[in-house]
Length: 420
Ligand code: GLA
Image (cartoon, rainbow, N blue to C red; front, side, top):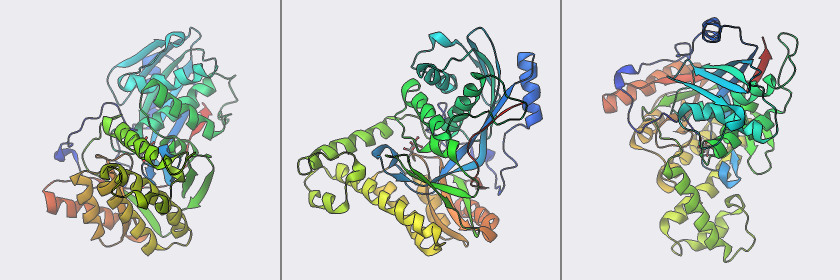
């Protein structure tokens, strides 16, 4: 999900500005990070791992129902530097947060708390899988916004899993690709860290996007089989994320509540459909006879998941045929379903989507990620990307008197790991 320091309150409007590039991000340069590592640990790092934040084009709250999602890794990134120690101790610092994490690997045990929990979780998950980790000094940096629904936590855990897997091996020649595991395996381990160490019951979408992304592509992921298909984003389209200024709280009760509401609905459906596995297996034809025969809230939760899966499959075709009209309708319909049926939106996200619908160059818009705050994703005509981003910011300011931030993000590669 997202950064554990998030709180449910609007960001100060004064800190926001219009921007149509990511170059103004808070990430320090590579050389500054290297210097910080050397200053902090009195030696150079050995390995660098770099993982993507993610934007989800469509397929929200479907991954934990074994459904379909269509996310992309983006050029907002998390980078981690590390060097081995031989004493079984972890020293972890972050250029983005106060404090440090220090722990003995053999004593790591959940629950993890704060950013330190997110940093230690992957090492716990690797130890649980029998990977021998010798101890490490680690420095974290990056520019994925915290609490923005763009996978700051998943990208951290993917990057750390890749880093520590490399540190657990014999060093490679300088510059060689140090990732000897399939990126999907890294995603699985990173999710295990978030579920098992941080106690967040997330699905696997964020970790797969962060680890397996490909430049210029979204990933159609079947969250049951983990089969993935890379779908090119048409050259004439671009992606803008717009910040609602509301930080969503992590692992909040509402996310888990949606899961238990859906589980109770599935139980009802099983009265007529014995052996029904997951919500992914439910069709609208199976669901509709139950309207009015189960609590309305539960019915709407199920309807969202069922219709959203359909929308993802249609969105794939719309991307492949560069059908702007079709994908625009799907994105707006997804948002409406998330707002009305799944009830995971908030007034700021609804307004951003409504504003975007009237901005020239915008093809479609919806909330992205878990919701309750964070960002909207806007598919826009590439030749109008910057003016569309500015139009969203201006429109939002006109309607609320508040500034917000909208940036163009690029579908990008997933995890890379290298010896330095
Ligand atoms: C968060 C979770 C994901 C997914 C989305 C909603 O980002 O981490 O697994 O459930 O919410 O689609």
